[in-house]
Image (tube, rainbow, N blue to C red):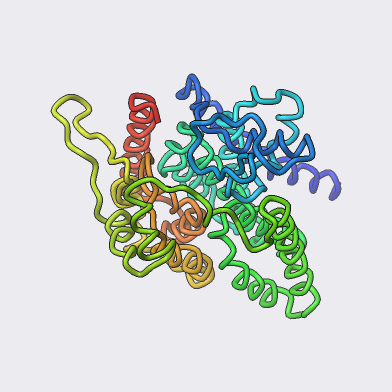
Amino acid sequence: MDALGLGGAVKRAWLEPAVVFAAVLAVYLAVTPRTNQAYRHFVYMAQGFLQGRVDLPGAPDYYHDVIHFQGRIYAPFPPAPALLLLPAVAVRGEATDQGRFGQALAALAVAVFVAALRRMGISPRVRLFCGAALAFGSVLWPATAIGTSWFFAQEVVVLATALMVWELAGEARPLILGAAAIGGWLTRVTVLPAVPVLALLVWVRHRRAAPVLVFLAVNAAGALLYLGYNALRFGDPWQTGYGMLSLGAPNAEAVARWGFFNLRYIPEHLYTLFVRAPEFISAPPYLRPSPWGMSLLFTSPLILRLLFPVERRGWLLWGALILPMALPMLAFFSVGWVQFGYRYSLDWWIFLLVMQAGALGARPRPVDGALLVLSIAINALGVYWVRVLGW
């Protein structure tokens, strides 16, 4: 009887995220009749891997963020997203729909996140509230509607961070946590500064050196893979390709004067994060997103609830993961482009929503529901504008 009861509990534990995955993906597919096929760097990267190459064979000449080196075209991006695409590209080749694949990954991330909140003992109402907040009340939804390479990478990072939360909510196994970490920073290097914090959390959980060493060894293996990948591309393990990019105005001038990272860039990021508003137009729907991004307070007003939390359970932990990823990007030369909201926030948005789950207490209040509905409506408008503007 115990065994049967345990089996039933396991089934119930996985039924909820399975339903969440199916529901979220159904909405993503329904509201996006077709995805943007203009920029699919990772499809060509995966195709190169399948051919034993590290360039982008067949990539169109008009592609941005590529490097022309010794007669071949390369992307500066780390390889993890292309590795995820390998099975699809092996079957469909260049016809692989990177955008649709990204929508599936985003829906999976929401499901894993809901499962992680269940592991943490969060009530069903709150975890489904936070799942909806991630899927439809954040810039993840418009990102899935865009689907180009930059947003595909963000979707992979959201999945990686959801897996981190899921594992931290459980046994914090160093092998799995390490794999999730390298999956994140081999997609966007912005995740890398969180690795020392994750190592500390492994130590806090296990109080033994061995699990920490395993976690660090997994990340060291990822680092060797990345260095080898760079050496194969450019003959230099430390050359990521970003320093070889041909940037357009105004970025080229800024990087030439101040480099890729500089404190001078911080005000622009802070303005985009907290102040930048949409543009007003004379015809319905009267608001048009700025391609430079918009304030998180506008795109996801539900985070205002963090100002009035019921409790602050685990805020130190999740804040310690957010800060090393968010702060360096404030000094980055670009705030992003052709985006709804501030896409870099997706690097750490999952961790902020865990804090949100604690802030809600046992159940969401009517004002929380109103903020969620408003956030969903705003991001639905974002999906509309993505289609209208051809992003």
